Amino acid sequence: MNVRSEALKVAPSVLTTHLIDLASASVRDLNTALHALKHDTNETAWRVIHPRGRHAVAVGIDAPISVEIDGNVGYYCGGMNKLATVLVNGNAGVGVAENIMSGFVHVKGDASQAAGATGCGGFLLIDGNASARCGISMKGVDIVVKGSVGHMSAFMAQAGTLTVLGDAGESLGDSIYEARLYVRGSVTSLGADCIEKEMRDEHKAQLHEKLAAAGLAGEVDVSDFKRYGSARTLYHFHVDNVSSY
Image 1 (cartoon, helix red, strand yellow):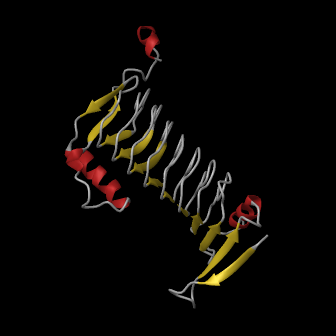
Image 2 (tube, rainbow, N blue to C red):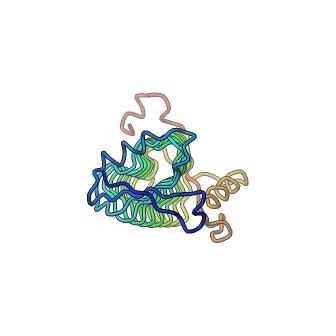
Image 3 (cartoon, helix red, strand yellow):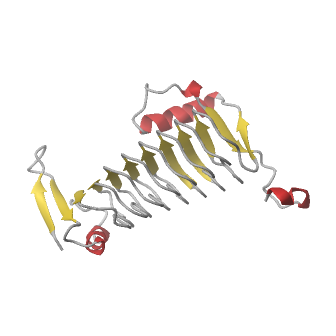
């Protein structure tokens, strides 16, 4: 495994950055090193170079550390994350931050399908666009997409928030439960049981909080957004609704 440490210029006496070069080390080497970290570790700064679209980079972390990845990643980067901050200086493939439990995953570029899928907590920030099924079956994660999202986003969303500064594709929030969707741009169509809802003060406050967490406080007017959520007609099976399931 090609792992080395280098002193950070900002505080060389305190912090070191552990550098892993995926041109010579394997993803298994990287994840094994990250999984060995304890909650009280002082090895909190990690940098990954030459990811070259590899899959499952920095998955399953369970420690309060920071991992910065220089380049594009493949499938499932930052999946099952707990406590860690994962920064991707590039684009992310399918399932970035899938099943995230806590912590923060930030994609500086675009994300492919199923970003933040099934996430139970934590925060996912995508600076670019996200493809189809962003936030599918989300269960508590907060997702902010500065660009647009593709079709079937927030499908079967159960809890959490999805904030989209751009547009949303077809069938937004299909079969949604209790998640809150905030969209500033246009929505091509709403899915089954998803409706536009009143934007009350409590929702504006929540949206402001999420935008502030994304570093957008004061840059975006919450009044520009519309809120979408469940009409709550499909909670229980009823034969009259069978065509909507």
